[in-house]
Image (cartoon, rainbow, N blue to C red):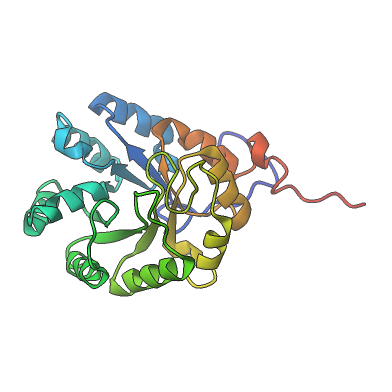
Length: 256
């Protein structure tokens, strides 16, 4: 940090297994990726090339090289996994990821229906080659999953070998663990946390109010994802009490 301040909560140092910040890259250019890393790299743990953008990104190899040289893990969005799967190209997906030097993959079923035992089978197969993050929750706002089912699905996917389970929210933060308004389904979140360790969950939280909710609930080292590249520093400041929303959160209470 640039200067000393007391009463700053301790962030787990990188490389870390909790307190993660996952950024969604929806189309940064090679130069923009360099600029992004020059400012935000120290506070980012993993970058997702959102949904199917990697398929249409010009100079993809050059951009991946920028991230690789910075030691930044990258994975392709879960929608791309589903796109390969629905076309019966699962083995091609493995080959593509390996060909591009990808070390992390996302297994999701937000756009297509996959029997859960089959989904867990894909997780097991992919763990032989990659670090797996599996996403729970549907992109269909009308598809409401009850809390007990979230817990059941998350537990099974962790048991199948997922390093983290991702709580679905989409890029807008208006499905899955959130209502259409973006409001957190607090009862759902708190029930999940009675059974699933918080450090194994990556909460997609693209909106500031959502990030604030999880910081207040679980502290500065909560795992947060789908963060926009230009929101990394604001989020890191909020994590440690240097934004108005959390200014008093970590200060020692004055004696009466």
